[in-house]
Image (cartoon, rainbow, N blue to C red; front, side, top):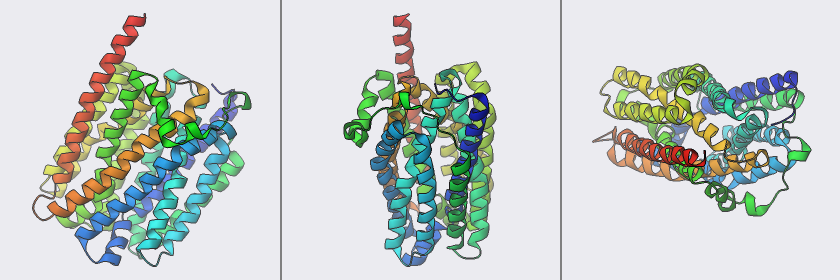
Length: 408
């Protein structure tokens, strides 16, 4: 664990929390308007669904390539410079997308965003540096709450700004990322001391090499599989939700922004307030399974929801999904040393990025062929994927418990 003194550690935690909020606000601002901007270029709701899926896949594909590189760079050079460069890169990228005259410019913007957003791996590694293993689930829950807080503000601001034009939110997003960079420049301390760093190696930094780390322990490999399925299911929202809400419920950017804000509030409550007590009572493993089951029920109800009210009520069980990610992160970080936390987060992000490439393409295609006859089909399929994740997670943790019992 890092040797940050309590005062410096509090400043570091404050920065990570504030920066996570600012970054996610910036990302959330563009969610309600990006599909609409794509639709302006192509002139078709169904085709916009496919192209939006392609754009999300581009973003995830770049994360697949860049995450292990960035994670390994942070293991050698420290977490601080990586996080700061990411904030600056995101600010420049949002300016690029604000000026985009066609789809090709937007595509380049999504590629750059995928590279710069890969520093989220470093944020998780930073938390592992300064947090003891038994407190990591709660710490990751707080990061999740910060992300959720960003999603409360971001979509609402994006929906409001979208009324002034689809490009206005991009300018505000650029400004927020710039503020995050300046704030970190003056506040953020380094969390990884020089004696605990690991030299950069392309063998570990390429996606395949980074994921070899996941094979060192059977439970780590199993949890990586759960991570893949979780992210695959979750991308149903980024791929089709905005278009789905417009087609089925006639919601515009403002209504979509408010609903996403509601999702963020619920997620913030779960990850910020409930993760700690639930993990203390149930343990990381059972809390993870509970979260996956809650998400399965919520997604299935969203696919069925015949009215806007029914969809909104389905958000309640779906909010339990927020238990899964911090507990997954906590379980995985316990399996590696301090000098490999960046590599682990890069490998985990690569797994998530593979899902991020395949899932939007899949759900975008499903939506394009089913919007006229079965608009909720994509949500039903996502619920099925998450149900498989819950089963797989249960099998994995059972094996892990048996292995631990055998070593006692």
